[in-house]
Image (cartoon, rainbow, N blue to C red; front, side, top):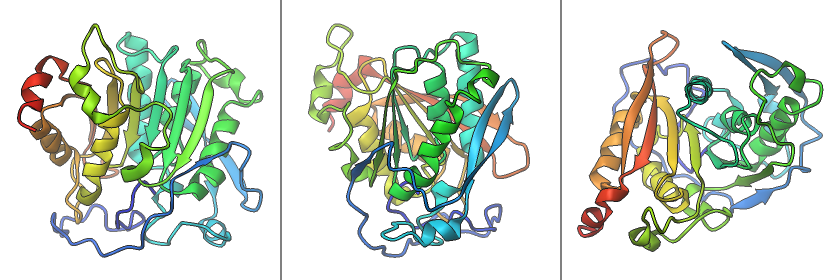
Length: 311
């Protein structure tokens, strides 16, 4: 899962219109502490199988694990019906990979030499694509350490294996020396553990001549369903995105029935803040779920003095 928010992501009623946008989220236990998960900490007690995902001109591998086996692990922080969303591959993740692939082909985006962060990574396919496209550093974050150990790390290893790489079409910029790290924990505390971050107060000093270090590209899919978690998520983005040229690519449903979140609600919150703006890259209406969208968020550094004067 992605944050300390109660949304039963495995609900079979996702397409129902009966949910109220202001549903009350029940109280949850405190989130587990933020930690870095080492790539060597792959779970050996959970069976991992792999299958190809055809994304048009691009093919990646996705893993599959038994949720029962993961729940049975000692000290697992996954909770059935609450903290389990990262074990499922959501449509938004595939939408995001397709968009990133097209953006690279069109010359609108380059991962070569860039620092990339994927928030709420789950399977980690967008971050894996960034790695194959030449990113210098790729950091994966998920709420659950067990998702990283049982799924994200094995997925990365499978897609970068010598057996699979010959079949990858977009690997011309792939650098086997890319810096890869994995972090587990809640968004509200995660900035203390991520290597590329800055103090929010330093944003006032950012300019073309005095850029602020951070992640060049932040990726996230299906992370904004819970309104109660959005402020922590957005705050983390602002603390970690490089300035003034960092970009955020976000894939999500237009509206998540029953919990109130969605792309338009998140965009409204961001626009009121006045620090970032967004452009719609694509809209997906394939009938498999609610309308889905991919947005590109960018920093309005030219109006930052006006925005900060009202803070």
